[in-house]
Each structure stands twice: as C-alpha cells, then as structure tokens.
Image (cartoon, rainbow, N blue to C red; front, side, top):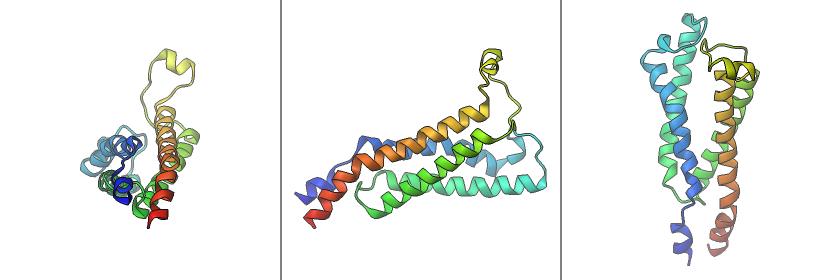
Length: 150
C-alpha cells in the first residue's frame, strides 16, 4: 500500500511548472541582457542587482523543475514549496506597493481602472503563491498517510 501512496501525484504539482513559466523569461533576459529589460532608471548598480536576481530566479526554476516530478510527501519538495510560497507572496506585496517602474501602458481602459503592468505582475505572483498553498493543503493527507505506513 505504501508503494501506491508513493506513486500518487497531485495534478496541482503543475504549480511548480507555472513558477518556471513566470520566472524563466526574466531570468534569461536578466542574465543575457539586463539593460534591455523595460525598466526605468537602470544604472550600473541596478544592472548588477538585476543580474543577481536573475541568477537566483534561474536557480529557483531549476529547483522547481527538479521538484515537480518528486513524490508529494518528500520533505525536500515540501520545503521547496514553502520557500516558493514565501517568495511569491513577498514579490506580490512588493509589486503591489511599487511605484511605476515599467514604462508601458495596457491601454486607456486599463489605465482608467488603475491596472498597470506592475499590478498584473503582482497579481500573477499572488496567484502562484495561492497555488503553492493549495498544492500544500491538497497533499497534507497523502503525506500523513505515507508517514503512518512507515
């Protein structure tokens, strides 16, 4: 029976792949050519910090890719999910409170509702944070069941 439990995979593990989809564009662009990113007031200091962030983001993408296929009850996968939850929650909060730093508009209608690229990006991070929480909660029972069989 423990093998049956260990083989079970939650479809919500796709949240690890969604993390990659959100982070990999800025990770690649931030390492390849950070000055080409559409951010205001980039100077040498911010370019170095952006490259460091891109390196961390790329590392988190590798982590998510490796964790995606692991069994739901493994402590390493669960620890990675907690870390990614905290990251996305904090990133969402920072982006919601940030002044405009992306010089693009989503159109007059969006601007009339105060919908900016920063808010959209923050919302995406918030949804990912909730996705990791849902994954965690949906796999608690499986984790407890595997722990009982051992």
